[in-house]
Length: 227
Image (cartoon, rainbow, N blue to C red; front, side, top):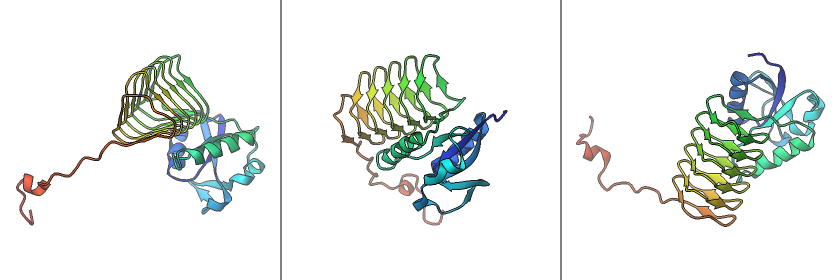
């Protein structure tokens, strides 16, 4: 694939390394550097590329010549990613998005900037994604759903039709929203939770953990010591 655009990845952790892989393999972007805030700068090189202080980023890589992608996880209910996204934008950078070619995205879906859409996501007609959103692998986003800025959806989340997810929300693995649900901003929906009515802002909803059986696995399968 021809590499005709240059990209700096803001971040140097796990999410940044995954972003490097996807942008390098699947897009026409050439990743030219990583950037982190000076307080967190531990290495001067990663993946054979320079790691530059975020405070000095525009001095090394002009916003007129390169684009940027903020690759940060959901830490502190997405606040760190949100702050760095806004600061990168304020420096004058255009924020790139990554949408996997192995995702299903209907023709009239709208996707904002600095979005990270992994493989096996399904985005049905009339879905709208705001800015700075992460959809990890394998989610279903139903028709006419709106996801506001700075949200993070972990894998295998089901969002049914006509839902609205407020800013900064986190939806855990295998969580489910039925039709016509509105999540207020700053909600944390835990793994496996079933949401059947709309929420207020800032709610924490967790499904109970499955209890371990009183009968152990070795006893169930009649495995003796040493086998």
